Image 1 (cartoon, helix red, strand yellow):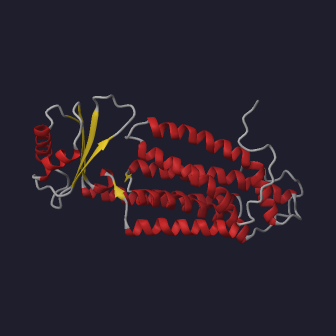
Image 2 (cartoon, helix red, strand yellow):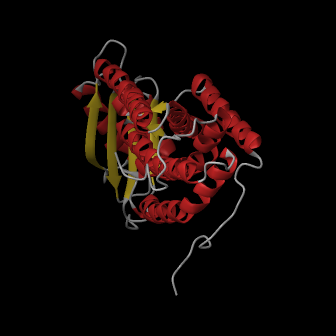
Image 3 (cartoon, one colour):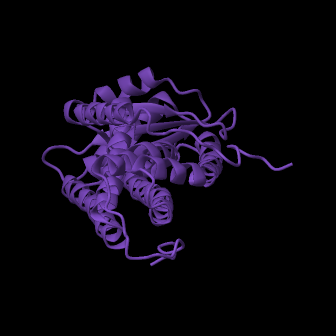
Length: 318
């Protein structure tokens, strides 16, 4: 017996409440943008500049004791957090100490790092310093600029590709869906103050590719059905196309989410931010392919191609 996430044949009306779907998406985008403007992102060491020290000890970690030990050093804000992971053993206690770069320095000096380590050793003699990562403010600023350019360039390339392959209405619908996905992903990172580093930029670009792939599958079926059913209203053609591709969409999304959720639980803290971004991106990407990209296409309308009489025309990859 084969597993079916959706029935073989469905006839769900995805556009009966299309104005509400657009309203919900617009509201979520406004909330995400407002959170980004008002609260900002919790930039990781890649973007902020400074030093991150990862420690490991057989003794339980008391964040308050650690903070009191380094507070006397006069280094400004030092963020100390304990790292929890199911893969850690009972005597494996890990902490992250983040020290921001000082105003008059490119990065935290080796002397300052050694002073912090000495202070921690005084309160936890069994502590070990697993890794030390440093990034200067100048480098971090360049990374932010490069990251923004990468995301914008990817979305612009998508606009150009869809415009060539389909029509401008399809291109606009796809780009709005991609902006929706990227903005909501940045918004949830801002709202929850999850560390935002270069790995998250990689996740954003991957989300763009995933969402585009799902949208193109739907749009390709829409183009085929527009040539096949020349008298049907656009809303009916869109509904038919989404229903015909729904099984593929759900199977792809669910199988991807199974792998991502497994990594989210068992993958460890090093990749947790990336996996969380991917998990959220798959969910909003699947939603946007149906309720944003296609709804924008319905709203804009599309000129039908009467030049090709073959019902199968337009189904070949270009």
